[in-house]
Amino acid sequence: MDEAVRAGVARGRPRSERARTAVLDAAADLLVTGGTDAVTMEAIAARAQVSKATVYKWWPSRAHVMLESFFSRAKDTLDVAPEASLEEALTTLVGALTRIFRDTESGPLMADLVALAQADRAIRTALDEQWLRPRRRVASQLLRDGVDRAELVSDTDVAAAVDQLFAPVYHRLLLGHEPLSDELAATLVRQLLAGLRNRDPQRTGACPPRTAR
Image (cartoon, rainbow, N blue to C red; front, top):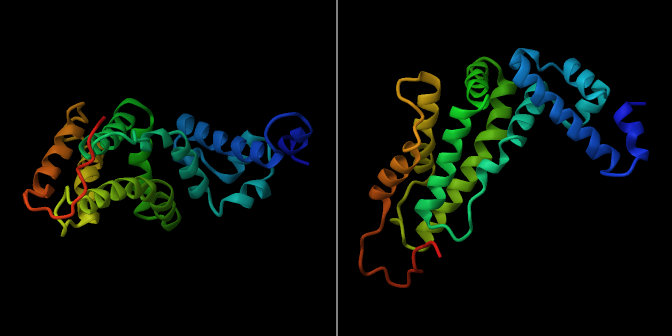
């Protein structure tokens, strides 16, 4: 029996949750210390002190566990204050992404993952499911709410707007032609909203814009 599972007799989280957390921590540690090549199912299982079967119980491939572990250490970058204005909320999202890429090991790791995703379908799928979609979902909802309030024009292409927000961050990360500066997030959001704001003074029935309290 796996050591992590045997430990279930102790107090604390349920056995399966402890084992799952151990696997995610192991994968994240391997990513940081050895890069993507170090993250194999065998290495994850050995570091987490569980069997490979335990790892496969929750993840179909090393790519999925690798991306979930990566995301688990960056999930707070999706936090947005409920009282924030639309501009503030979007700036928070883009700024958090910029800082984690610039100031932590996540930047080089993401660059490696993007490169690997070009030839590895499993990594490409996991990257989409575990990293891109959650971030896009939050930003998309903020923009749709802005449209519903008539704060943004009704024909806003939300998917394209999300691309406009985040693509420059990945562009700078991957090519390094310009820095991931502190001012980048505010600039991207300000320029995007300048083109999307509804300037019609007759916004009949519109809810008031989302503003900070």
